[in-house]
Image (cartoon, rainbow, N blue to C red; front, side):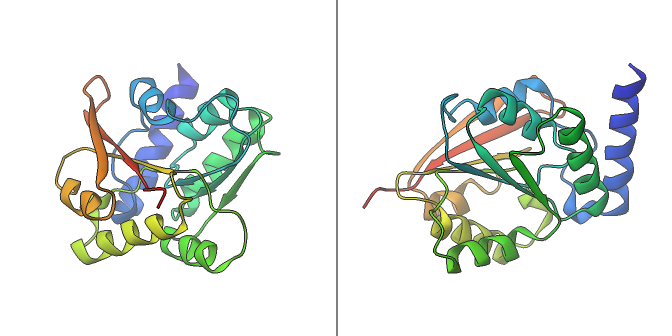
Length: 195
């Protein structure tokens, strides 16, 4: 109980220090995390890119669920990036997860320019509602460019405001509510065409 309260307190403090980079006041709960990682097969052995992992609640669950996968977690908030790294290390999962403290835009630009294989999954907790429409369009476009053909972009939000922006780049989009999460959320499952 004390550990859980400390986790929530650290998350709240990091969010208050950088509100434009944090979309919630508490970490995502298991209901939302389960919906976010469900499309990734347990046997998946490629790379998953996670944007905005916060303190690593989803990252740890994903790494445990998919032991053959490699995870690249990109967190812009330095305090949360340190918490995420510490959580992974204490769970013994830091050998398969690389945490970088940088913006998603920089990471995605670098990935698109590299000759490395494109990821099949991009999972994002970036608070799109906290950034401008132009920034959201740019970010979604960069995710689309770096994602493998047939790959899936999974995004959660606390509203449906950015659904049209995502739909413009990913016509194969479905939305699922996660009402048991606090606060309630929506999960976008966006599939990139194979053509």
